[in-house]
Amino acid sequence: MTPTIDVDHVARLARLVLTDEERERFGRQLALILEHADRVREVAAADVPPTSHPIPRANVLRADEPGPSLSHEDALANAPEAEAGMFRVPPITEREEEG
Amino acid sequence: MTALCDRTGHDLAAALRAGEVSAAEILAATTARIEAVDARVGAFLTRTGDLAARQAATVDARLAAGEAAALPAVAGIPLALKDVLTTRGVRTTAGSRILEPYVPPYDCTAWERLAAAGSVLVGKTNCDEFAMGSSNENSAYAPVRNPWNLDTVPGGSSGGSAAAVAAGEAVWALGTDTGGSVRQPAALCGVVGLKPTYGLVSRYGLIAFASSLDHVGTFTRDVRDAATLLSAIAGHDPRDATSLPEPAGDYVRGLEDGVRGLRVGVVEEWLSMEGIQPGVRDAVSAALDRLEGLGASVVPVRLPHADYALSAYYLIAPAECSSNLARYDGVRYGARAAGAADVVEMNARTRGAGFGDEVKRRIMLGTYALSAGYYDAYYGQAQKVRTLVIRDFEAAFGQVDVIASPTSPTTAFRLGERTGDPLAMYLSDIFTIPANLAGVPGISIPCGLADGLPVGFQLMGRLRDEATVLRAARALEDAIGFAARPPLVAGLPA
Image 1 (tube, rainbow over the protein chains, first blue to last red):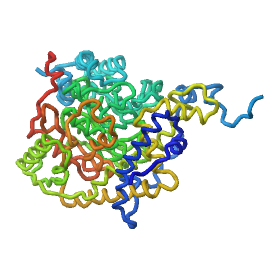
Image 2 (image 1 turned 135 degrees about the horizontal axis):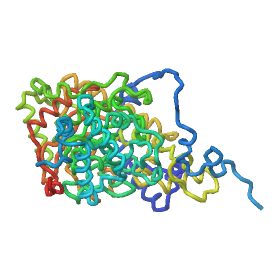
Image 3 (image 1 turned 90 degrees about the vertical axis):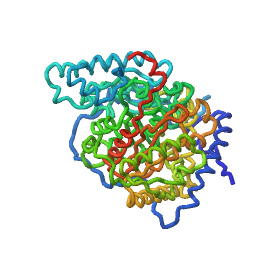
């Protein structure tokens, strides 16, 4: 069975604006890829632990020594918009309807 | 006579020290080659001629001051870097529109180490967008063409780095390998591609795609250069928490020790697989015969879960990608879509306009695989398959020292041939993906031609056992004596 994917829902979660053409095409292609990926369910048994990293390392710490880091100027140099030493973005909170 | 830009790094290093040639002359030959061929190949997104000239002059000044003995092995040798590796003050796009204006404020560790050792950077190479692809056709800028046949792809995602080294536009190059993105383009372009053990080379400054699978790797003209370049970039880096704790070794040592008594495993199902090009199978079989002739024993091994590796990879890599690429939100760097009423709309419009098809597909796939109700069935299950693939390798490496296979099932395919069919494209990496899931080292060396195009031979080894992989590759390379040149380059004056 070909899995179905709710393209609009996933695009909203992924914060992607898609065109109608993309919605149709990705829906079709993702179903095919998922059908192939679905094979992972044929093998793995309940007693197999998952692996998230090929060479697991835990509690990786470095010495807590102060040193130079990215300057304020460098950090803002690539900002699409900056103002008063900060990143500037469109409004975050919902605005009241005008008028 | 071979042009300077077509010689190996170790050969040029010796010539530099003997006073036969200057770093400026090597750079001039390389620059002339770029100007002669890159309009057709398209290997570079950004060229760094002024920086290269300064770096070459520094090396020449040190040679003039009698410091030849203290000069690192990579000094004065023209290098190209895949454009997913950050370079301070030099635009780094990851092949994406969303990073078109990005000028990193920091160097990746691999380049920082090479620069400190006197390496000469000639430019940043084209690649599939965010390293997602197997043909370089997912670059947002332009496709790269294979120097062996300009109607075919160079492979991907590090296609520009592979093509540059094949065409003499750099003596060597760095790329990245998440599912085969160094080894597969190396195979398709007839050069040597090495993906070391996970964590051996720092990922600091590697623009992240799938962090548990991403590796920095090398493109070179021979195995000795691969060992040399790896020695210069490997070793612990406190800025990458997954970096292996031990210091780097000298990977050139023991390179010529041969393969007598070495046990080479072959996954027989892979060689008899449907979809493998007959010319690829023949060249790989001939190379296996040569290994036996050199005193190695070739025995069958099984990787029973390798069949499922591709499926697991196309859940794990997109899942990690969907998380890593969340950072491209139009706030701190990169492009921003104009005219949005609020920040969420700005994020979504920026991403919709800034990412190409394959990146969007993988973000969607990963978001889906991680979403509520599907996480256990897809991502969780894929992680279990990953465990089984690792166990397969552990069992196989109990019986053999290295595992040999074709690098890719086919030689270079034609531009446009697979762009409409993502699954067909994904199959290019069927033999390279298992090593990324397990983190084990792998190398591709050219083992012959099939219908005029290079065939890659892959050797994989135990975790941290680059030495054996390189030694076996070096012995085989010597026995094969692959000396063919891309027609594009063969016609040029030396």
